[in-house]
Each structure stands twice: as C-alpha cells, then as structure tokens.
Length: 433
Image (cartoon, rainbow, N blue to C red):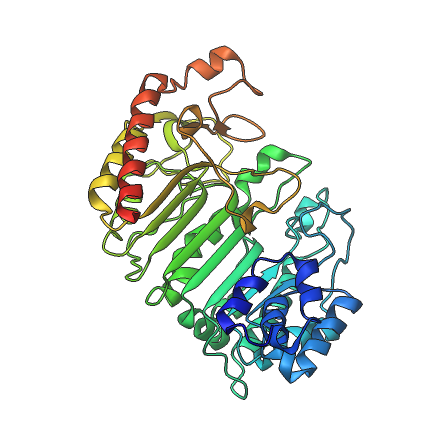
C-alpha cells in the first residue's frame, strides 16, 4: 500500500462508495489523506443542534477544515416538503448565525450553497385568509445577511469562493441586502451562480397567484440586481424558477452581456420574442454548454387589458375583461435550433427536454436529469382568463377540447423541430470528439 503512487491512491478512493471510503480511511496512513479530502470536501449542514455541532467540530480541526471545499447549508429538516403553516415561523438562532458567519474560516473553500424551504409567503394584512409559511421573507433575509457577512469578512478573506448556489430563493429582494457592499463584493468574485427561485402560491384563490406584485418586481430586478454585479467573471449561470417566466413574468436580459459565459442552464423559461434567442446567441464566442429545461415557445396569447408595443401586459393587477387581444408568435423550434447550429460555433453540449419538475424525491435543481425530447411540450399557450394558471399545454387538463383547439398548437411542425434538434446534437457531438 505504501509503495503505490499517489495517483493510484486517488483512483482507488474515487471508485469506492461512501461506506467503503470511510473504511478505507482506516486501512493505512497512505490512504488517510486522500480519503479525508474526499469525505470532507463537501459538507451538508442542517439547521439542527447535531448539524451545527458537527460543523463546528470540523471547523475546530485544522486538518479537517483544510479538506473542505464546498459547504451547503440546509435551513430545515426537509426543505422540499410542504410544512404546516403557522404564524410566527422560523427565527435565525444565534448558533446557526455563527455557523454561517464562520464560513470564512475554511481556508480552501471554493463554493457555498444555501437550501431554503420551497414554501414561501409574503405577509399582507389585506390577504388575511392566506396562511404564513414557516420561513418568512424576514427570516430568509437574516440567513442571507449572515452568509454574506461571513463571505465578505475582512479579517478572513474568501477570495477563492467563486461558486454560489441558492436553492428556493424567494422572489423578494431585500433592498438592504442587495444594496450592501457585502452583496456586491461577493457577487463580483463569482464565476458560477445557480439560483432556484420560488414564488408564493395562493392556495385559497389560485388564480390570484399571477397577480401578486412580487412575481413581477423580482424578475424586473433580476438582471441588474443578481446578474450585473457578477457579469464580468461569470462562466456558468443556472437560473431555474418554480413557475413559468421570461414572457410573464417578464425578465429582460437586453443590455446584459456575460463575456466569459461558457455554460447556461435555463429552467421553466418561456420564449416569446426574437430578442430572447438573440441574447443567447450573442454569447456565441464563449458558450460551450446550453441546457433548456422545460423551456417552451409561447406561440399563442389571449390577453385582457392593455399591452405594450411588444405584447407585454402593462397592468398585472388589472381584473377588467377588456380590451381583449390575441397575439401569435410564428417562430418554431426548427428555426431556433438552426440558428444555434450556425451561431454557437463553440457549443459542445446542447440539451433540450424536460426534467422531473415537481416529482417527489431527488431535488431536480441539484441533478442533471433531463428527458431529452422535442414535440408537443415545446410550445405553450397563454390565456389570462384561465384559472388556476394562464398557461395552456397541448394536452387535456382543466380545459375542453374546443378551448384547446383555439390555441392552434403547431403539431405539423413537430417533425421539423425534431429533425433540426437531431442535426444540432450531431454537430455538437462531433465538435466534442
């Protein structure tokens, strides 16, 4: 064992499952360091007494602390489960706050993640009938403040922390946080940013969910608040959202360019305007990986109230039924894939399909599972008069066949779309070989 080269030790360690790896640590001194680095390279810290104490024990050991490269904080026992709502909710404990702020004391740290509950709400006295989620916006803000204080500690600088992942970030920006030096300084160093954004779902009156102000304000602010500070250095960007976004709520990336972007992964994003495709194609000089996860083209729109010159809803809170308007978008996926083939010359990995959104079990944001297919799910209709959601997919659900037919899904184009996608994939695969 002692005579084996270090490369062989590392190879053996990486072939073992977790249980075997833990046993291997006791085999010999030769394996001890490699195994320790693997076992402690990524920490998952739950907001429990045991979780925080284990974290502090590792931090107090200089040998173990040096092995840590990635830390993921989990704010509750099972953040992907819906919990019973009750007034008051979670409060940031002194112990968890200290754990978040002490993150700067891991000398080899390169990445940080925070995993909130997927259930969220905004307290509004006028909506007295809506329950309050356990993790309020104020609690989430306190957690983020503590984390960013730790990442921007002048006594313990963290210049190597270049990756940030926030799972179940509520679509509410705290002005105190996003205008702070800590926030801007940390984001300016990032090369990887992964955001899974969640929105409040109004269970009593589901149709009102799409009229909540937070739904629109956050995505209006997203490009300048979250992306502009890290634009110069960002190489990997993954924005996923638990609802449709892009067209409604509108997220306008025009004017934002990421000169080093190599990997882009969009989740639940909807295409309605040519500029959205052009924004992706504008990164052709650097983009190597593109994933479109459940990102349909909005080919037909039925709307009420005033629209602007580009077809965006002007007043989302408007409940009037006039004026009624209808828009269609003639672009098809065959055109999109053809443009990607021509104008993304460095693309080496292209994936289009649908992941296991909403499936109980593994957290889809944390995996790369994708059912790659092009077909009826590639297009979606929008009807502001429908409830509980204005989005209409090409399948029977809560609407009749007659209502579905009026959206005119481009079924005749599906074969062309598939052929264009297959051609893009073949070309991209050939580039990587």
